[in-house]
Image (cartoon, rainbow, N blue to C red; front, side, top):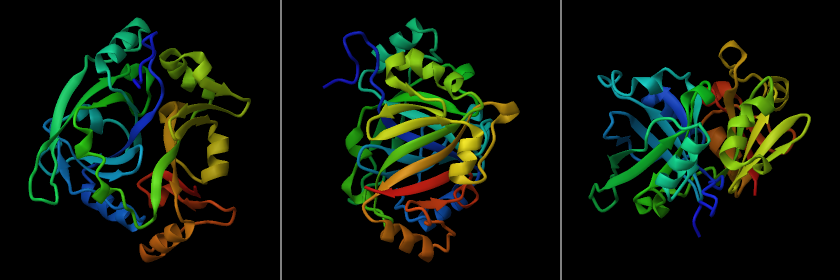
Amino acid sequence: MTDVQSSQKPVPQLDHVVINVAEQLNHAEQQFRRLGFHLTPRGHHSLGSSNHLAIFGENYLELLGYEPGNAHTRKDLWQAPLGLTGLVWKTQNSSAVYEHLQQQNIAGSAPAEFFRPVELNDGTSPNARFRTVPLAASRVPNGRSFFCHHLTPELVWRNEWQRHPNAVADITGFVISAVNPQDAAQVYAELFGASALAISPQEVTLRAGRATVRFVTPEQATAEFDTVPEGENGSARMIGLEFATRSLEAVRNSLRVGEITFNDSDGPVLVRAADALGVAIRFIEE
């Protein structure tokens, strides 16, 4: 089954999320291990950036930054605020996606291909290869939204990286705070079709595989997550993630071991943005 229908309109499915950590890769790695995530060895892109990944069943989380001496590479990335800055969609047909984006007048740059050597348990380091297709930067404030075509998915979704102390199985929620949620979601209506969005007075939602992308007001974001980052000059801001875990007790145990403060008074386990590199986190039991 392809992710592009006969109309060439992509079907929304979350591929991964990006947390911009800039020069704080060491701190980010330590903090997310304290949150109970098993991270891949540090990878280094052919474009100059570096990362750690937390791989789940259908999607993954990326801590993206740079090592000393590489601040000059990919400067466009580091202009975004620290924290949640990347909403990334799956595709297996990057050329068709780019054509669709052009037709909708929401295309960014042309598809770009790059690679990252991957350290495997057998001592080899084959190259994981990707092709990315971005939406127009002007339509995505405080971050990026793009499609990722995995040319070597077997080097990303590996069993040895999918077992986490906190028992997380997948990312199930991505939260964007905006004064006007419908305006913030408009680019995705143009991308996926208006019928892909569910609009209510309080929020706009978009199903994306196992995940749901939610556009909420700053007041709603604060009510759910306490203090969260604000967008520049009131613009939309990516602020929170929801994870499905097989065991909330495993989450609690991981957070206690990591000495991370949490709140579980209403069922789900909440971690403040201040304790997760500016990203509010909610764990739910699947």
